[in-house]
Image (cartoon, rainbow, N blue to C red; front, side, top):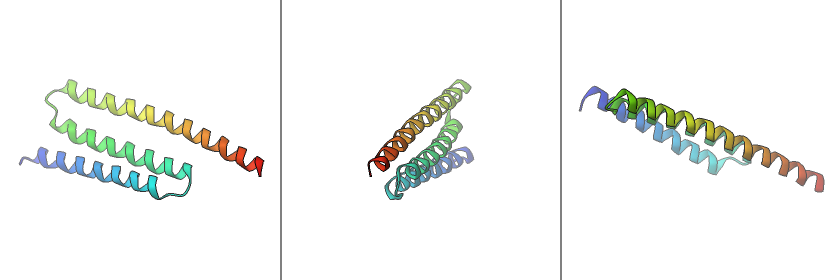
Length: 100
């Protein structure tokens, strides 16, 4: 196994650990906002590490740019989705407080 293979495997492994940590945060934290924070932070970092590991194995520079583009698009989509879910959760929480 070459150095780049080992480094790639290490980056992907650490990325998977971040994914597992984000999932644990999703399952363990008490409220919606802290769950969202744990999930988006860990998943974005995890995906970045997996992309870095895969980029080391890419055959061409075009493949590396495609991987980076996918990562950027996922970052934008997850940020938008997180903001929408957080806004909805905040509105719903306020509405429940008004009813009580």
